[in-house]
Length: 88
Image 1 (cartoon, rainbow, N blue to C red):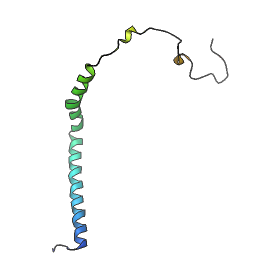
Image 2 (image 1 turned 135 degrees about the vertical axis):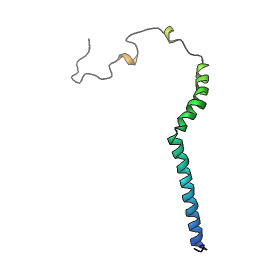
Image 3 (image 1 turned 120 degrees about the vertical axis):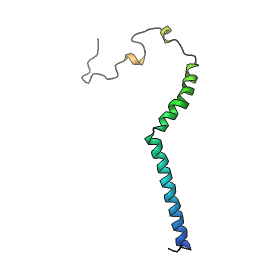
Image 4 (image 1 turned 90 degrees about the vertical axis):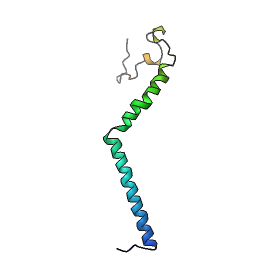
């Protein structure tokens, strides 16, 4: 089979290169999916760094917060009674 020359040959060459690249990318992405490599990298490389960062942060002691009832907008009923009755 003789090699195509001219514009048709260039178009065929670009299409062939695009197809090869797409197949290679698909193979790599399938391997990442099949072996669950994205989760393994996150678990082994990224999560320890995040844990070290957040473990070194200073945290407020939430048990020292004062306890108050019926204070602020959260104490109001967000769903008023459709019949107009009020709560005691």
